[in-house]
Length: 519
Image (cartoon, rainbow, N blue to C red; front, top):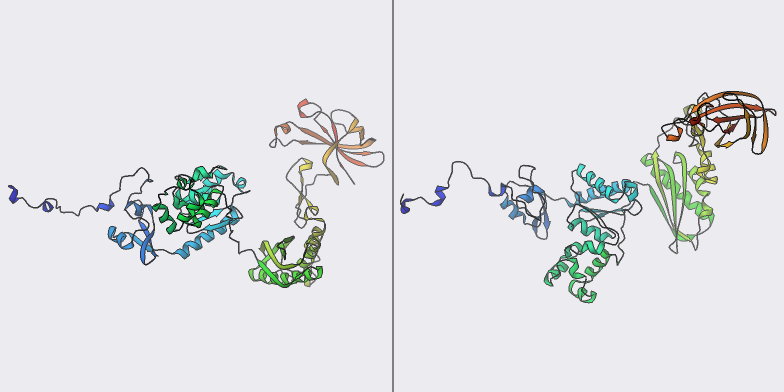
């Protein structure tokens, strides 16, 4: 066709089917960008929030970013760019509540000091707690896997200061960054100035004066830098580098029952402290009853007028909220409180609580049972001599005598003892016998010397053969003990054993030992 008769170019390209949307084609990956999720791999989603007087995109998923949606873009522009994108209103309150629940979960599982780092982070103090999780690297991997299971993406950074960890987590190149001790300056130098958590005015001034990275700020004197960017920038820089402390205000576990008393005048006498204890315990009993709990431990914190703090704690063998019993235990700790110039504030916490339901007292009131609960007596005795000094013995699953007994809570049921005859007094460690006369291989000893005294045996019974527990260590694979119950000429009865069976040398060295005394 001649040129004047050819149709326009737009008609030549017209086809019967609809043309492919230009923004639905996956964009080629760039060098500084992560792998882009294709359009069909996930439903694109963007959140719209109010920023100033206009609606902006405050968050976008990877699929939405692949279509050209960016944070800070106007909502009208985003809708015009991708009309079928799933736009939803942002909910900052719900996000803050979720972060608060995560911080509370972290207090109970990861570290006692956890705080929310607005708007989208959580900071933890791992000092003294990293070894409980297998080290910092393993903790970061486990934390990232936890977030992935919960449906979140996470960037984790560990550094000497809170400001450095905040900057590395948000502006670092990797998802997990662990800065070595003393390496904060080197790690922060290539990061942009925005990593210092500066205000928008300070960031604008930094761009005006040509400050692009944190390394550009370091050689500048503090005076001129403060005049250009403000004192807040100097403070943030010092906090990130460790020149100024930035303490973490931890999120308190509000689940812990707490009652408090503020006094009009300071007190210092034992009678006044006991009265405050009684008032606090009355409030604590009501609080525990409303929650259906019983206290297993209580902690009393008294604040002095000079800023000092006195802390005493008690524990109970069973959950209880009986104020009279708890007051009796707390009074045993009054002598450990140093009032100084006076105490002006008291707080009572129950860090360890358990569910406590109503008890059936019908059998006790009718006299059908005479069993009495020893928990109160155990608590009082433990308060006087220490909880580690009050215990009872229970059987353990082991054939070796010194391993067959364990110390348990005094109110715990001891269980069923085996039918084997054992001495009333069993030594924790067997004691050696000297100058032993015995017929090998199966006869009990006729004479032996123990603790510098000679004994003549007039009767004996045995042997009772006990083999070593080979699954514990290699030295007990072939170990054998032959135990005998013997009686001396004065009526004393003893439990002795010989190492080895008297036939094979690898079963023992044929030495004799005293392991217990019968009544």
